[in-house]
Every structure is written in structure tokens, then in C-alpha cells.
Length: 285
Image (tube, rainbow, N blue to C red):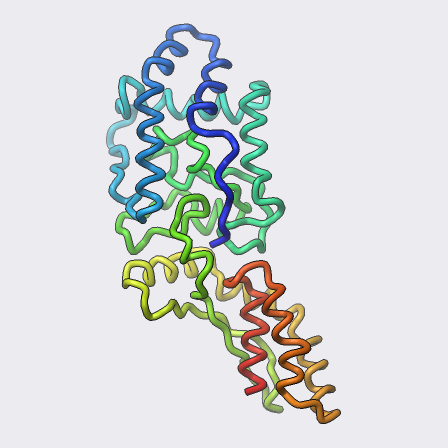
């Protein structure tokens, strides 16, 4: 749900760097021979990602322990390419690419909207079932531990409606249009006590895209995580608004002075901060 810029290293360069670190000649030659088909598979991945059709790419059969996946390359060889020639700290040049990918989101996990700090590279399509993308930069998403281990883990979509938002290649509408809304929950004194976040995509979206954002929202527990973030700051804003209203400051002036700047300064439109101030705006009426 947070857009990431295209990786600075393409699939061709990444494969070349990984291959340069392979010492066993037979394996090195084998990967070099099948490099063109891997690169084409990477192009097909990006095209499918932009169209929301990554589910059209068939996973390997879990009943087959070590199938030939692409060209002459087996699953184990493609997984090893990641484990030993990309992630391995001893492979200095490849590890530089790994580190750049991990740091490209700064300290904000793109899956949960920046709540967690990226600590791992998540295979958007897991390498256990899609090993041909084990070192494809666009398939390697910096993610926090919770999103990597719990929110997503080894899950992958079987249908288009279950496909979570892809930070690198997905349609701009998921990042530029608002689909997470919020409202204040009031206490017995009719004052905001918490913020409730929910999914409400634009009416013009097709049903699959509406299903996708709901899937993303639920998979990463954004209702609860966003509400927890808002709870830390809400009371301060409520106290300020209450004091201004007691001073007979009109609601429209409060909105102009506090609410609108808060919404405008949110990191992105579906961020919890934007939702919190939007909820406060609704509270003002």
C-alpha cells in the first residue's frame, strides 16, 4: 500500500552479479545459458503485476520435490542462487544489491503503511513455489518482521481477488486514491475516544480491485494497527479541539487551522494519520 520506486538494479544486472560469484563452473554455465529465459520471465512478471494478473503465473507443484522450473534449472538451483549467491554476506557485490533493496523503503514497511521497520526481503511470490523469481528485484519487497512472518508468510494468491497490493508494480490507483476511511468512536461525553478504520474503495472501482484492498487490509491487520497508532495521538488533538470550541472558535476555523494541515501532511492518502484527521473532521461536522 506504499509505492516503492523501481529497484536501481534490474534483473539482468542482478543475475550477472550473482553468476559472477558462482565458483562451480557447471552451475555457472547452466545459469548463464538460461539467463535469457529468466530475464523474459522477469519481464512477464512485471507485465502481469501491472495488470493485476500475477495469479496467472503457475506455481510449482509441492508434490514434486525438485522440479525443472525454467529452461534446465531446477527449483533447488534457483533457491540456492538466492541463498548462497545473493543473500550471502560473503558475496559482497550481490549483497550490495540485497542491502539497497532492503533500505529502499527507508524505515517504513510498505505492506503495513510504515508502521513496522523493514528487516527482511519478502518474496512477494514465495521462492518455494516460484523459484524463477528468487532474485528478481521486483519480487523482493522490504518488509517488517510481522508482515513477513505473520501478515504474509508463504501465502500467495490463488485468485485475482486475493492478491494483496504489490508495492513495486501495481496500479497507481491503489496508492493515489483513498480506500481506507476512518471515523471517531465517541465516549459517554460525546468526545472521540478512538478511531475506527475500515475499507471503502471508490465506487468506480471494479469488484476485483475492491476485494484486493480488503484482502490487503485484513491480511496485515490494518484496522487494529492503525487504531493503535491513532490512540497514541488522538487525545492531544481532542483536547486541543475541545479547548478551541470552549473559546468559541468556529468549527470551520478549527478545521482550517488543525484538521486540514494534519490530513495534508500525512505521508500518503491511506496512511493512519490521514484517516485520524479525517475522522476528527467528521466529528466536527
